Length: 211
Image 1 (cartoon, rainbow, N blue to C red):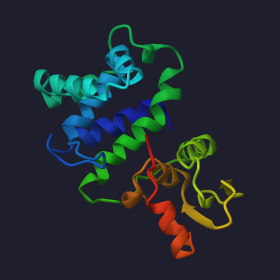
Image 2 (cartoon, rainbow, N blue to C red):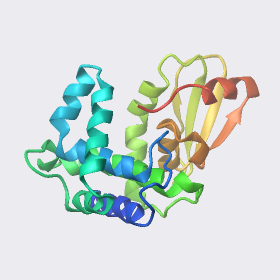
Image 3 (cartoon, one colour):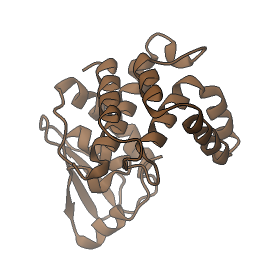
């Protein structure tokens, strides 16, 4: 696994679909997603400022401008080359820290957006990275959940991770990469087995996840 391999996989997935192809991001086509990735890397200061001021509408407006100004194929090619200008994503180590899992998730957004939920082959390094990041992510995404959630990995098998202290328990079982997709809000596309009392499962499955 390498950050570049995930970047290449994302760009390959984008190149393989029409710009209007659906993705797992609600309301976003492949073109929207490409504009988002390019903006995140190459115009991060404007994006960060808009988010800090809680003006997501400005981000959407900027995305629309990018989609109008830059053809889809050019955007994908630019993403494949890497961030431009004075981007913090050009600093040493930022690619691995900030992009590996981001690009993995967005690659699956494109691949599985049309209903192909067959997982990509992954290596142990990616699965270990996902498992390493899951504790903090799960505590953030499941904060305040009245049901205790156990994350159970199967690649390779290991001790489960428990999140929350509610009296009811729901177990999410699967590869760490699939658990990551589930917690990022890609429930319907994630290959995760959900085990528990139906009422407790309903609480977890109707909870807003992701960012």
